[in-house]
Every structure is written in structure tokens, then in C-alpha cells.
Image 1 (cartoon, one colour):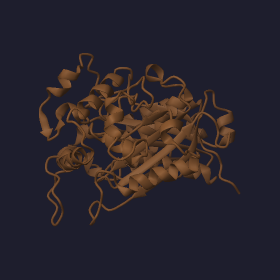
Image 2: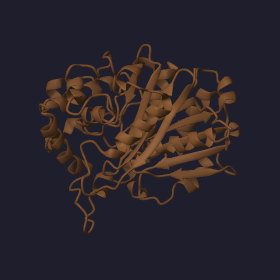
Image 3: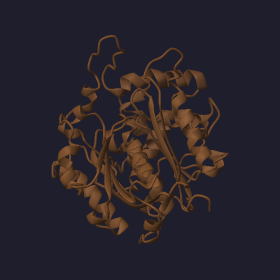
Length: 388
């Protein structure tokens, strides 16, 4: 029996902020879930199962929160599954939900990911000294900065590229009412004048620490036919992983990322991603990862990714808009950041992205990575069902 086509019919996000003290974790996830249900024109009774994801529990200091969140998510008496793959978890959570629909295990699934970082401190949580392992220093940036420097040397990229990405994404965020960072006074000079945190990454080129949640309703073809709004159809999705450290690992362009993208393109029938994909929602927690991932995902040859950024290709009005929502650089509830990339890709092909809608978007890639650049999840969505 062929796989069931999977459609995204409902999307909901919270307003992301450094601290959502107005709601508990349960209130936060329910806010996103209710917005997704409203978008889909459905109620809790229409949901067959719930798939929830988040980053490590120590980010909030609360173990297995999914157990008490079942009530807030309408999952009492329904199957509920927790997913965890570090920073890529939002994407992999959506893929697990999509697979349940594709395999006809469930017809309509609510998938949700969240983080409430204000109730802990992820940066210092990621700075624990672990015996016999490479120290992360102060947060994830201390781990990734050497890889950025390696990319700059390998590609011959000028030191100005990171600030161009940050300036672009922060301007894009001004079009997105849910984005965490809204800086109407942003200028390129302001970005470049920010303090250096981890050479070559400046404070203005790093992701914020956010509270927030994102939810999606995934359903089968029959459910899509009943949707009050155009659905986004899943054309391909994949996950890949590799160890954090091993001899010969390429931190600049991890093998798992390349393989994951190749699998998604194969499923979707994409031969030339640079020409066939209209929008990319890419996981860029530090600005330099835009040119690095452009190469890793096959949009540019090795050493050429920074040239796409520099020439304006990835701008909102460029040939290949990257992160029209403002991206992870503007909103980063870690457990939800990957799902936001997937959801924003779906919003684009549904024509429901509001002020940051890219004209004519028919295909979009959602991308997430996590851990020590070791976990990858991606999907490609389109305005038409697969095979059309």
C-alpha cells in the first residue's frame, strides 16, 4: 500500500520573548496548540495523537514535563510521544508526527515543541565540565566559533559576511509579529559595532534565549480536503545523525547534513535545489552558519556559500530568500526552534506568512540541526500534493 500523503493544515505559534512570565509551561504550549487548532478549523476531539518535543530537560530543570502537559494538550486518553534530538528536536518531532500519518497509524496528529528558557539557563547548562570530552567553554558559541573560523579559512570568506546575515535576519524579523527580537533601529553599522563574544562571532550575530512554543496539525488527504485554508503538502522528510567527535569529522560541512538533504531532495524529486526551491527556513543560531549551510545543503558549491550572502541572493527579495521570518537569530526557544523552521516553510507555501510572505513561494525547505552539529532533520513542503 502506498504511503498516505501528509498535509499541514494548522499552524500556531506563541509570541516569543526572553521571559513569558504571564504563563506557565502548560499555558505556553496550550497557546500554540489552540492557535494551530483554530487555523485548522478543528477541536481537541479531532486529534488522534500528540507528538511533543523539547530540548534537554535541564534547560528548565523539570524532568519529563510531557507527563503533566498531556492534560494541557488534550492528550488524556490519547497516544502521546516525546521526541528529543537536541537542537534539531523541533524538526524531528514534526517528522515523527508526519510518519504516523503517512503510515496510517493516525489520521490527524497534533505536534508541538517548546522551551521556557527563562526558568533555567541554557548557556551555563551547556558549559558543564564533562570528563574526557572537549569543553564547551561559555555556551554553544564557544563550541561552534572554531568551526566558523575553519570555514572562513577554507572558503576565503571576508570577515564581513556574518554581519550581513544578522542584519538581514533582524530586518526580516520586523515583519514577523511572533519574533522575539524587534529592533526597528537596526543598522549594519550597529551590528558590526557589537562586542565580540567568541571570535569571529559578535553579540549581534548570536541567537537570543527565548520562551516560546510552536504547534502544527498534520493530517491525511481526506483531512486536507476539509481544511478551511490551503494546506502545505510534505514532499520529503529525513533525519540523520553522526557522533559529536570522531576522526575525520568535517565540522564545517557535516556528512549527516549532506546525506539528510540528499535524501529529502530524492524523495521530492529535486534535482537542482538552487533553482527548484523558492524559500529556505534554515537553522542559523550564529550568523556564519547561513553560508556554511548553503553549501552543506547543496545550494552552493564548496567555498561559494558566502558569495550568495554577499551578493544579496538570500535577502527577502533575493533569488533564494533565507529565513524571511527572522530565523533563529531573532527567535530561539531551543526545543521549538527547529519546528518553527518547518512551520514557517509550510506557512510560505500556504500563502499565510503575512507580512513576511515571499511572493510566488510554491516549494520551501525547513531545516534544523542540533548537538555538536550531529543531528539533522529537514522537510520539503509544497503547495501541491506530491506527484502533482
